[in-house]
Length: 386
Image (tube, rainbow, N blue to C red; front, side, top):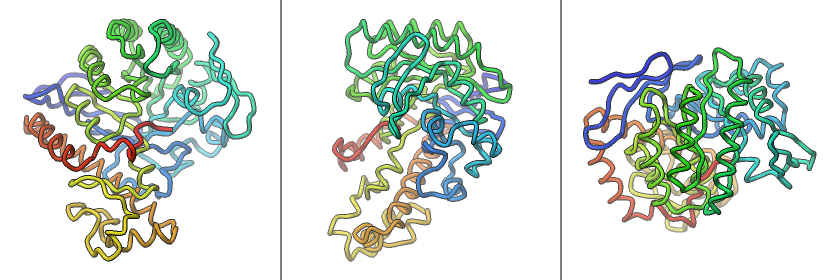
């Protein structure tokens, strides 16, 4: 057993077959065992789920979002009500995304300037400015355990000049975020940009590491590139990041992508996929996905996944289908809960495989199973947070 790291993060076990590792991330609101998956509570809620239900799945950390809370109800309101943990009734760790991806994907009429991003709210069309300094101010008001620097996200594939310009701007913004950051009980993570260009990614890593952040995220992926291209970049970037700091792959959530990234040394993940697909009647199971509106489930007495101990799996497939066909809100709630439980169990299995030194075998088994059961059906699986 080897241990590296210190106050923020410790690697407690490395896999003998891959670059996968188990670690402990320490925050002001508790520890997180990595590799870890963060369900997305975009607007200070995991949609449809009470905090104790989310905690019951084994979730140790969740994500919320600067962009959305900046627009509504505004971070000053959250701070006046005791901060984000008290506001949403979640007392374990929270990571807040800086809003860079949402500016890229949701905002209307976005204009990127050196000062920051100027955009019109997707809610009411009002003009909003998000600078690196404001992104940090918002996250400090929210009181999250981990804050992210503001970055400039661009679509992939793209011209190298566009990607390089966004990467260099992200570096300048990261430095401004670091200078603005004051909270001592909040970690600040840098974000590696550079598209699908290995040399740009490595240059970004080098400059971010010189600045010295508490952790490092890999951003700008799962924005249109094939999975193989993402894996190629992870092969370059993840091992180049400091071993004594946590590594976070942003917005990537297909189950196979999580395992492939873990094999390359990634520690943290987030995605809306478990809850978004849950609300749309897709249940993840060990044997592959189920579409719960399908007529084949009408009289099926079995649970969605016989191997799953979650609350949702105390009900029959027939009942779950009925809820969706009747448009009862309990259907999306139960399948969302089950999907988060599936993800957390998958990550527990991954940690156990790393502890046993057999993660490579575990990954091969999942590759084989899921390739047979269309776990990677692109028409059904949405793979990016919003």
